[in-house]
Length: 231
Ligand SMILES: Nc1ncnc2c1ncn2[C@@H]1O[C@H](COP(=O)(O)OP(=O)(O)OP(=O)(O)O)[C@@H](O)[C@H]1O
Image (tube, rainbow, N blue to C red; front, side):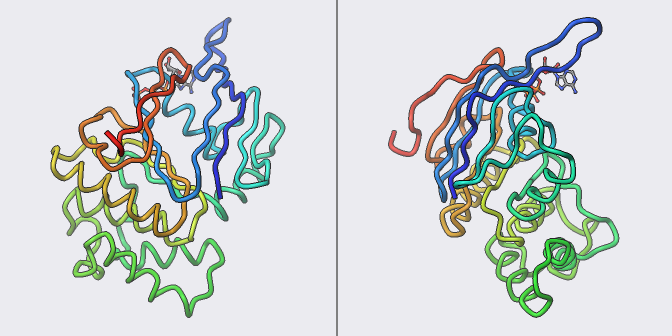
């Protein structure tokens, strides 16, 4: 399903005044494609991702997945949580894995919480761990994995619920250039395979050689940029 943000504005209270973190943004991400969101610190990238994820209600505008308007200024916390659980995969800057679970168990628990049938969980979880190149480490806990391997487990975990939308915040910030490029390549490949409309927030344009489109945020607004994949 396509992800569509329409006329999205996000205003934070800021002491006695307000701060507009996202200002009237329109963004469409077609199903199965990856859009990179670039821009300087403070431009509003994480704020826009938080609105797309239903973690923050937009002050104005709507977020749509396929034909369904999912987030508006009046969406309740319960409604937003349900949409996030059922339709959206999130990967945060730090992988946020549970210390006591193995890599395989991280995925199984995640899928279970999203109501997937137990019989289908393990094969799908192993398939995804294999796709991100950590199948050999399925029985290891986070402390036994490298930073890059933990990031890969987090990406696999976000996809195990078969989300229609995948939102990834700074996946390469802790990685060197080569590993960062490979992680972006992995995400764009998985987006194509699974059909997830994917957004990657990044500081590092040099790792984004495989994305379908890139847009730049500046001072809370978005400006269209070149299609990297064809350049
Ligand atoms: N919870 C909040 N309350 C008030 N202001 C906020 C809040 N979160 C972010 N801001 C402000 O909103 C603006 C946009 O912040 P945001 O984190 O979205 O930018 P960013 O582009 O993701 O930056 P970075 O690349 O440094 O993560 C900044 O001016 C920031 O100070």
